[in-house]
Length: 240
Ligand code: OAD
Picture (cartoon, rainbow, N blue to C red):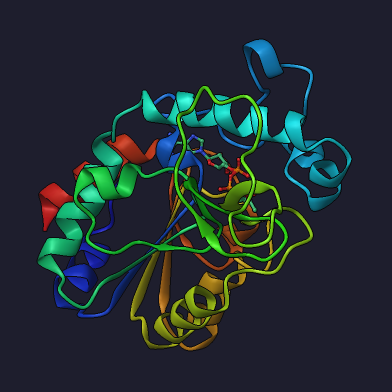
């Protein structure tokens, strides 16, 4: 399933980028964005809750949804895909990990410095003045107030319609322009601008390898390894 030429290219490469999406955490038990929500929140779509408008309309509801997600995220562990990526990084000192995920499973697997393009559910900030706010217990039902300006606390994640954090975006773009190989893993490649990262790398001459059991818009620019990341990545690692 893994072409020998890819193994050779990975052995020779110095600058490898890992670009991950929700699919890399699926085998840990976290639902992907385009999967149905479960349980309590089955009737809500992320696209309706993860927006500044939803928070302005009903901050407590959006806050409670994130508190629920924090409890779910705090209960799961990295899977073989996260561990394989961390092991690849240890072997490839100039590699970069860029993730769209708001969980902390890459960190828990030992990845030293994942670039979080969409923030993290485990960070908070003030919805009014933007100052960083501390984590609070995950069963607190109402958002605390900011000590600086009295604004409401919100998760430090990127919502639909918001811009990406500029430092992270610039670092990821610069790394994409320099990458020799990009592994795009577990992403539907539909949410921009994040999905531009592998495209920028491709335009700059990188080989793009995609790990996904499904077809995505990257199929046409990538070498496709069809299958779950938790199987494909350890297999690839074992061949290096
Ligand atoms: P999606 O939910 O859009 O896509 C998940 C992808 O993972 C799909 O292409 C699946 O086929 C694939 N997948 C599922 N199981 C997999 C497995 N075991 N191994 C490998 N791939 C698997 O998630 P993202 O692409 O991450 O944005 O979504 C991008 C962004 O859209 C998210 O970061 C989020 C969302 O709205 C924000 O929060 C701003």
